[in-house]
Image 1 (cartoon, rainbow, N blue to C red):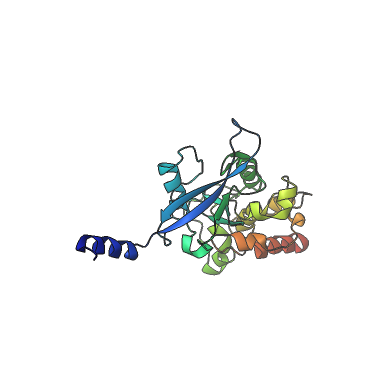
Image 2 (image 1 turned 90 degrees about the vertical axis):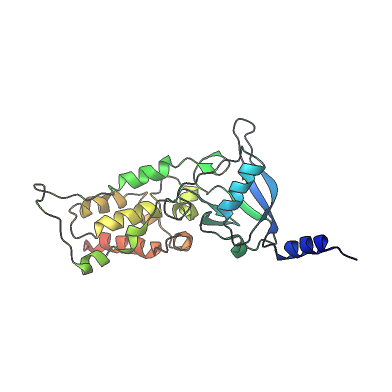
Length: 252
């Protein structure tokens, strides 16, 4: 006959929201080996928690050498982009319950950029392409004495591409970028779009010429991987097509 204490323990266990999940992480440490290896970790976690929470649990409780980037943990900084079950996602926005926790959850670094350790890649080529498109307002003449005004209609023209958080999820999902790291990539083009179509800016022609290069916008093959990967819902492929159209018509 069960005792009241055992009945209470069993009831609490049955009501527990936690499930056991296997994280299969692609590990790489150049100080140990030139080859990457897959390593499994089993953790108990609430399925409503995020992949980032699972990575924290592994790092804090099982293996402190696990290396990954994260900062705000709210989908704003873009630092924790990684491949989760074969797709580029932000670990802080991906819930355990949404990626079939009954099977191992695979986690690896984003593709197309050199892996430095575990889930951390060298972002310098990505940011260099971003800097190359001059992602800032360029105007002529004297400094204005008041704010540069803009109509709601003019602002709406590039509103979508202002949402980029530079996570590299779009660029590192692009097959062209995987095969040729010289390609500017979707994120750089998106940020060029943001200023090319800004009615206050006066350097649209310069940016278009930069993207008219052999490694520029014409390398896009319109596979829509970038649009699917964007955690902010930016219509990346549409923005790239609009830049192509501006190059042909010189209307922007």
